Amino acid sequence: RTFPAEVDAIQKADISFRVNGKIQNIFVKEGDQVKKGQVLAELDPTDFEITLKDREASFATAKANYDRAVELVAKGAISKVDHDNLRASFHTAKANLNSAEQDLIYTKLKANFDGLIAKRYVENFEEVILSKKIFALEDVSSLKIIIDVPENLMIAVDKSQNRDRGLYAKFDTIRDKQFPLKFREATTKADPKTKTFKVTLEMASSENYNILPGMTGTVYVEMFQSESHANTPISLPVSAIVSDNAKQATVWIVDEKTMTVKPKNITPGAMSGDSMRVNGLNPGDRVVIAGASFLRENMKVTLLETGEQPE
Image 1 (cartoon, one colour):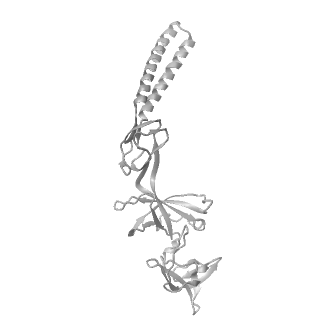
Image 2: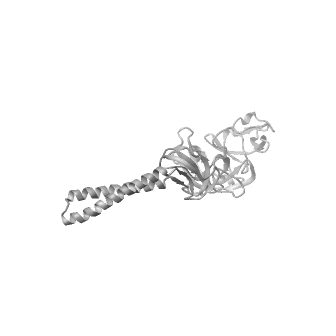
């Protein structure tokens, strides 16, 4: 079966400064590869340095007063209340100094992890406030491939089976190339509008092809083990099966290169609801299930735009 898929980074984050200020330098461009801890941009540190010097002076005074208070209270020269007030002032000055030192550190914006600068949201010398997005950072050392699985297929998946069985991705512009996938995670609550479950797969980053987040592809997956074996009965919607003039049960097979149809004889089996078990199909056959009675040989067809297309 095939599913439309979207590519995403294995890890991504919008990063921002943790203090207000004016951007003084931007060191990277969109598309640059960066390392964890690398400085990407910095704010003008002048105001922060002035504040730090003021806090250092206040701390030095508070520490000297507190050190004297410790000696004097031991001699009984000052009251315990005065000693406690000076101690509180000392700890407040120390906290203010630590805050000023940290704010100065925050004027340099560093990468949270190895990755690519996917997007830059600001220009140099721009005034920014804390939490304003500066860069979008994406880790593409491996990729997430996201698909939506309808509830009628999700409910039938045997969780005891190997979830990585028959999983691979293909991209329209990269012909005859399959990219192996691994199961990563799946939501357990359906989207209220589409009634589909989001399934995330993982793909190793390609050394030869520039596959990036936001691109689209197709995921091929063996949903049920029986679908991978020839001459095994396969369930089809009853709407896919028609009879020719000789009363022979027939389905229409789509040639995916020309998008034309040809009839193929099958052997019908037991029915269950709106489905019928049939023999005579091969793995990979794409069968028309809508409007089959109106088709003729070599007629051009198109795919319906749905969240899931049975291969």
